[in-house]
Image (cartoon, rainbow, N blue to C red; front, side):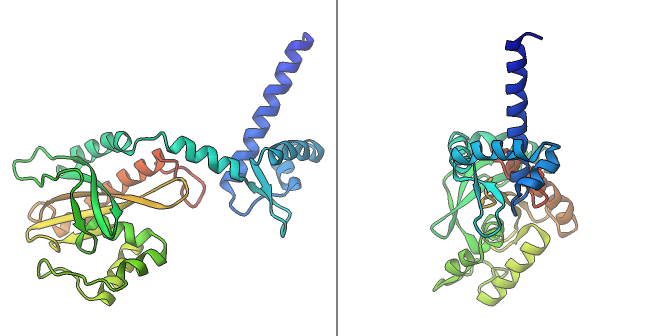
Length: 267
């Protein structure tokens, strides 16, 4: 093999090993030592150390002074945020919402929390004669919204505390939860089962099911829901419809780069 080709092969192998190191560190939040990495890569410790030094000099990895282990560095975060800034959640969500409508027959939404309220970001209307149309940009009270409850349930605990601080949970129907302690129990339930239900809490005859959407950093950035008349979204159908909503939320989270706790990308 000519010397130039040998050099190209070597460089390719170095790049491959480098990306493997980054993948390993991305899937292990506790970090890895040089010896551990060398064993997993089947490399000499000295070779692994040289690769780590190059990555550390570029801030792609950083060393934990207490444990001596390496983890992803700030440069990776910068690159990730730069890539995510170019992702348009509107474009990402639309095909997933379309499929959710096709599967459930109900209007699908994605919304975000702004100033303690849910703001409708993307909608895909059902073809049903009786449906729940919604305008992008419409704001809704979070405490009686499946979107709002899903976001609050999977946000950091202090977010829920801030939301409830000095807040009056206004009543809209007889089903609206207005007591703070009951609302906290509701949020605990949502966190436990993975989805939220607006059980005619905002409007009589309207039932909604929502699930959280996560960013690559694990932050709850939005939620997906379906909304329809209570005589179609019956309590007997809630579990099966919720599974479809959660699947859609996971697919959008995956497109945003979110990984599940076992290190796998959500699908």
